[in-house]
Image (tube, rainbow, N blue to C red; front, side, top):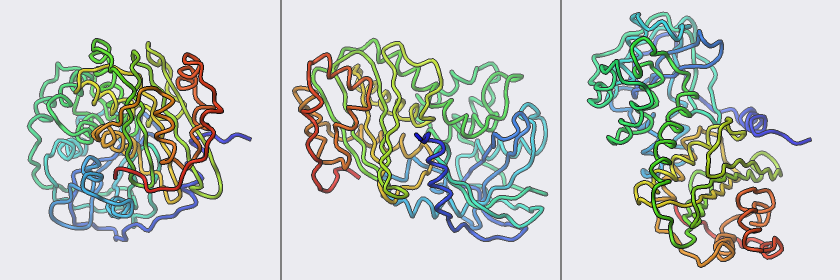
Length: 398
């Protein structure tokens, strides 16, 4: 029986309990700043802040953009995230005119960490890990919350007070102004964006994909107008028990995302993929939010260069990998695109060039592909040309 990606990732996380911070029913600490809006029971959801039981500047705990450039390991990141305690309270997504939502919005708009005090109905327990959002530690219902005075990010504050600005243009404007993706996403999630009466709390995992999609679609409209690159390029990068290869083709925009999971929980070798042709994709991707995170990261680099290309992205998650949210894909691909590309004269040479860095034979990716296989057929190449074994070596990047 073929297992779906969602079920597979749930198996991984269920088999890897993580130690989270222990706190009592009262917590005096700092929010990085961070808020989390759940999706269960929508449109009345569990919403609340995430607070670390320490004082000072804790921004790194909820700033994924800084983790890979800062050399943080998977253990470092999990240490940050398991130290965040989630307070929660049932809140209707369209009822924003109350003190609790005001507090969440103040946290989401803040440019710095916020001193916070929370009291819970019971001792916070458990943890949450998955592919759609970054992990966090124990949680409990809030009975009381007090926060210090925030210092707003000026760009987020500007969009917050513009109640005539729709959410999508607001997201795009903030991205163009250089506001970090995680800050934009939290602001959207806390209901600080959009026209006044249309504002809502947005579940965290939905807001992540909404931001990736809005930014990606805007970038794609620009990229479609640019000249094609003139050769096959490959950007590679490794970190957090993943290896990535971004293959750029001298074609109009087309995109394929392929991810292999190798011996993460046992001896499995699983491959998941999705794709779009030049007109884009209408239905939600079968592989989840990582499809949009990767797409946005590639388009971000192409738009910066003012060039157009087709993109085929191969990901290999290896033993030791733990799902930590789609930031893992977005930030790894961003870092891959920042590396100097290796230029090849054709697709055949490119695949032979990347093969030694993958544990899975490249022929497996080709055989399970759609866009990549189509490129082969156009060039009258044979799969047997790429059935050579991968070499054992140290991966580049990271």
